[in-house]
Length: 185
Ligand code: ADP
Ligand code: MG
Image (cartoon, rainbow, N blue to C red; front, side):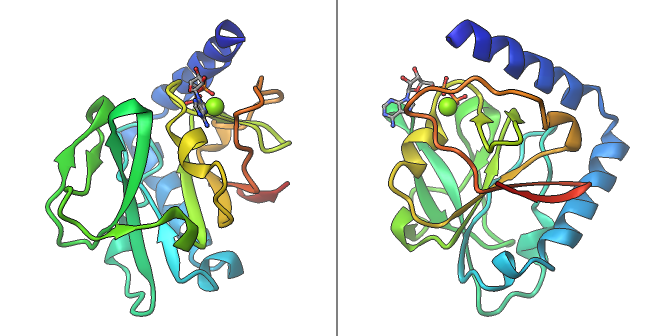
């Protein structure tokens, strides 16, 4: 199974890398514009976002928008491939975690996954049944096991594939949002 996942993951990540910086920027803008209009976003008080790698959908503008009533959190990588979620604001100083991703510091307020209403989940690939491939370490499978919040996969349309191989421990998404809009599963 890992080899099958690897092939699909590498293929989707290759397509994402092939997008130009400008194209990723425009698509990211479109994704944030449609995200903030969704009722599942408007209704959520505590939202887990992520700090993007250079080739990922960049949601960082979310933190700079005025959402007085909302609490944004972002993940920190822990040993054993676990995540902890910490409160973030646009003025925070971040540090570097797994794979070079930026992350909140250990001192930032810790928020339990059970308190998170909406998870914006980065991914390598997603299929139309909501099966998700991450970066191959299972970070989000562990973090989302038992979480009740809405799990919204975030990616470019080229990351939506016909079939993602999955295992019993993989946590499926409830929706997928790309520059072409929302799909719910
Ligand atoms: P990803 O979801 O990042 O694409 P995989 O689904 O291949 O990665 O999972 C990577 C590893 O994480 C697997 O070897 C799997 O055994 C482990 N894993 C996933 N979820 C859990 C979990 N809930 N508890 C323990 N190990 C897990
Ligand atoms: Mg997985």
